Image (cartoon, rainbow, N blue to C red; front, side, top):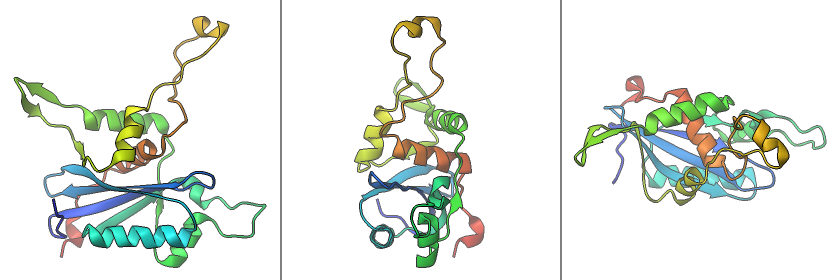
Length: 192
């Protein structure tokens, strides 16, 4: 469905990488606090191309952008390259980001809570806090594949369960964690 700037505000999370595509996810929030993961973008190449693709998508979706959150590592300078960080390059293009949370367990808990719901006889008694458009193919796939790591070998019987998820194809779940930890709400001050 189409978004309008009065009833919806949109937040963006970006997980940039050097060796794999950059992952971007958008979460739109309405006046009732309903949160919908409404768009995603997977982009390879230069930062300027990523920026252009994000701006084009935001215009097409009629998003009123509120806050942009980024993996804190995007502000790390590489001592072996003379180029500025990803965050600095995006700032130079006109986008300001805040550093998202790296607290994995808080992010997992926030996501678990947001997905929790209660249904009786096919009716939602307590709806979930978040929804996903079915067009977010990568985010949905990565959420479905997001599993806990397991210890292997002889030591697995002598250890407690591994307290961390597998660090593989987890870019959109990390973006989702960051947006939920940020506690995005419709900002009434900025409504036109």
